[in-house]
Image 1 (cartoon, rainbow, N blue to C red):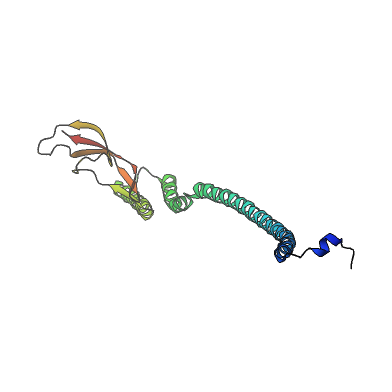
Image 2 (cartoon, rainbow, N blue to C red):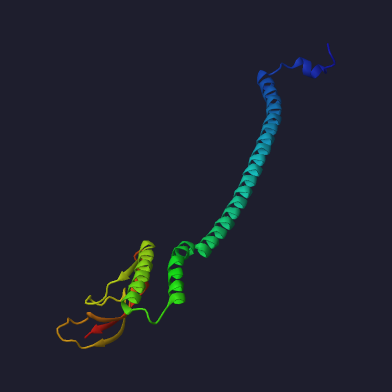
Length: 187
């Protein structure tokens, strides 16, 4: 006999107790395994969270750089927006300058008028090519979207609220009114 006491040797061994003891020992082993597994899972999730945070910070920095870059490009675009128009207008400026240098009061009026008309037509063509459009006003119904009424006057044989005179032309740039026509309207 081994070192067991006589009391325990004589008692029959209950198999249910053996199963419970074995199960509890297995649970201890499994508990340690679960603990290790959970610890590894937590470490993995913490690493994923760190990676996502790092990615988020990088994307936020990229977005800030993008905003700064587009803002600078927008400012540059605004500063140079009129460059094409002004470059195209330079020949008209040159024509006017040549006219001023070569102006001779003895020139016939019709030649002078012809030269001025050519410069005016050239300027009009350039402006139309850039989308500038004159607002037609005379004999049209007054429209506050296109006209500024300077005064009203009675005019026979003209319907009420009709533009009868224009003091200053109005213009649209690509369908946007950039200057209202200054007009006189019939009562």
